[in-house]
Image (tube, rainbow, N blue to C red; front, side):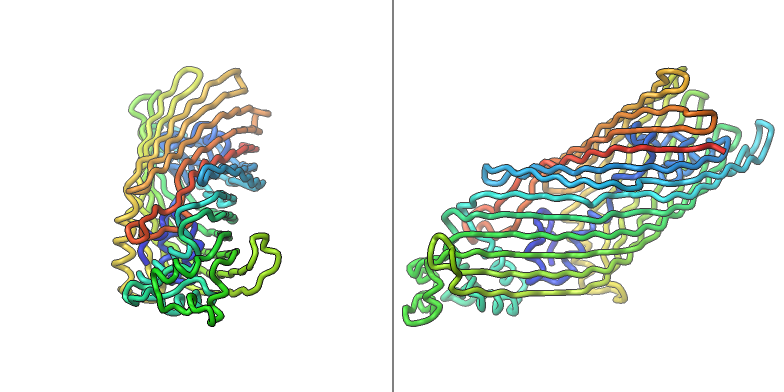
Length: 516
């Protein structure tokens, strides 16, 4: 299955016509991104942490930062995450919200001093943490009157592209399609292509990804810091999507134009009853994916002077094994009146599939720079990720014939992206610090617009000589376009429908910690 059919679609119709292999390609980007981890201090700083240390977030950020700890530390981070979406479709706008409480981060760093003098290795510290790396909780809905085409045209395109005769038989059986008079042209919809059709898309996503990491960091001469970690990741992702279409079927003249010998245009045939009828169609799709993986990271921080830090990290791919279960259902009711009070006929078709595969996420490379002042600091990061290098492989099958297709799909659809982060901290009083940060996320798509950025504010305070508390507010905005289905625009002389989505995610974070 080619990824261009998946990139900006809701995956509503893929279960019947396609294998689960293609769906796993569509999920590759989702499971390759980590956007949510860290303590409230580093989140308040915009997560610009590559050249900073002394925070438990260093365990997964830049493990070299563990070398800055002069004593042991433990903390837990709680959060409230709210996702708000506005979907605009054919001039109509709908908003949806979904919120959730959870534990964002928990960790401990054990400090082991090595040398009481200034020269040589000063410490060797070990950290263990749990981190919520991505929140999948979301609800996107859009609705409008589409005058241009029907989702059934997308079904017929898929039949033609992949030769899925089983799908063709199923859809003909529920009276949604008919064969062209010239069978080499495939099938055409019985539903009207022109004329207003009420279309509704409702996509509910739940789940999260998390990582448990073990890290070490050392301090040499208070000038050079080095560290590494091993991360054990897991995730659960559930996608429940429904697409509804309400409209009218074609009349006999419209069907006869494509196939004059069709049974639908024979008044003595039962198929004739399905013409000029009101219909309600539901495409219901559910997919559950869960996986586990492992990765590693190495990092270093160098202090050329006491008021400057330069940091660098290299993060390996995460090698995932993923189990994926898919259900898809298409059902349709036909009515002989506009009020749709009683169906005179109906039909349905279903598909289920289990699939296990391996996913290899991209390498990541980060650079950071921090400048310290008498009462504060500024920190900036740049991270490069080549999303076109994502790889999907069939579990247990070496050199699968799909491997080359998958690799090319990712190269065609995705590109390298640079993520930029900048943040600052200022000591307001001897015990209270103020923080702010900005994030810009590079566009991973080669041929599609995708704007994503965030801003953050935070405060930190010392509650006592050993206890501390940090709070942060992070607001993310993601603007993009999505198609509920794609059609062959040249063949049908009609554009694929497009919805504009504005996704906003607000994260309120509280960290409580103690040094010992």
